Amino acid sequence: MKISYVLAISLFTLSSCVSVTPTFDEALMKHIEALNNNIDKIDAAVSAVYEDKTPFSKVEGIYVDAVSNVRSAIYIAEGRATYLRNRVSGRPAQIIHKALLICQEALMTQLAAHRKAPFNVETASTFATKEACSVPKLFEARLK
Image 1: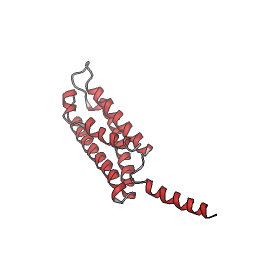
Image 2: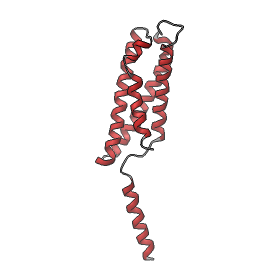
Image 3: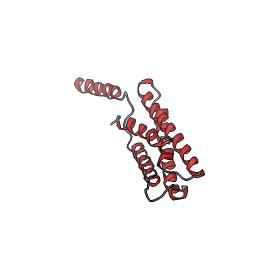
Image 4: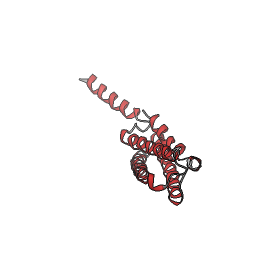
C-alpha cells in the first residue's frame, strides 16, 4: 500500500518537472508551414520567367491565405506564451511569438509594397519575408 502512494507521488513529481519547455504544438506548426508554403508560392509567382513583373492581382489570394495563417499562428503562440508564464518554459514560447510578429511585419510590408507596384524576383528578395518567416518554423520544430 505504501509503495503505491510513494510511486504515485514520485510520478506526480516527475511529471511536473518534465515540462521545462513549451511542448510542440501541431496546430501552430500547421499554420507556420502553410504560411511558408504561401510565401514560396508568392516567390514562385514573382520569379516566373515568362513575365517581367507580377501584378498584385495575380497573387492576392495567396497573400490573403498567408496573412490568415500568420494571424492564426500568432493567436496560438500568444496563448501559449501567456499560459506559460514561468521563466524557464515561458521564454521559448515568447521567443516564438516574437518571431511570428516579426514575420507578420515583413509579410505586411511586402504586401503593401506589392499592392503599389508589380514585383519581380529582385524586388521580392529585398523584403526578406521568406527568411523572417522561416525562423518561427525552425524554433517550433526544435520543440519536437
